[in-house]
Image 1 (cartoon, rainbow, N blue to C red):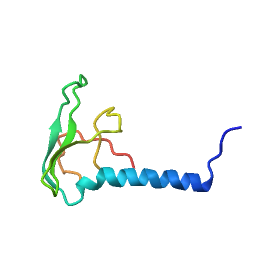
Image 2 (cartoon, one colour):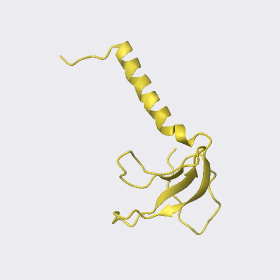
Image 3 (tube, helix red, strand yellow):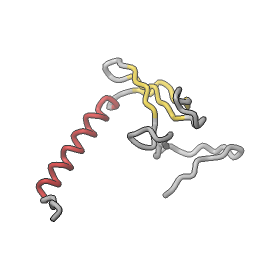
Image 4 (cartoon, one colour):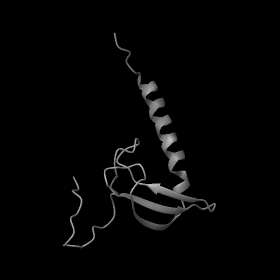
Length: 97
């Protein structure tokens, strides 16, 4: 018979998940985006360009943040929440939702 998670176990796992994400994202709090652009990754033979943000953290560290579709880096990702540029002669990404 498969083990069933109790509500308390599920809550502990959820809290651990949230703690990890808060710690992971913490360096971005108060950081400044210094530049944004696209780059091809050196070992990527698909010729896809990845969104990259250059960020300066509050303690002065420089971070290069690459936007990926998932944690394994299986392709470039999309940033939701930005206004769409009004450029009619360029193909735009398909946004679901």
